Length: 193
Image (cartoon, rainbow, N blue to C red):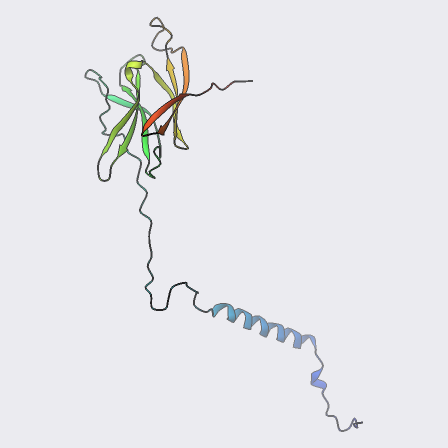
């Protein structure tokens, strides 16, 4: 048994709140410093191999119909693009542009043609497919490209007696690229409640 007189006074070994606060502050400083000192990032390459950055090619812009000569016979007046939509139609990763165009007549509703435009590498846009001929005497109510399909609402006439201002027939159609050509399908009419 030891004599209490032989044991030194260890009054400084009693923990006080100030000691806990100082310890917590010191630990926080060590953790923060460790956050700034990080090892180099691990890589799967062998030591001494070159590091290369590969960038993806810039996306090709959709063909612009401005300046493209549409296959319309307008008899001295210009043609006008009335609707346009873009998207990748043939799955090659590059966008095509679909346009509805007609002669820019002063009155009435001239028939429209629906055309697909594509651009080759470094070449201007050109017509690559005709989906609706102006000779069909149709107008285009809506035109869209979604999920690789072209959808359109075609407006027509039941007889020559129907005024050209007021088409009385409506057909919803879709074209998809299949087997190297655009295949047309009639879409069901949406029913109202």
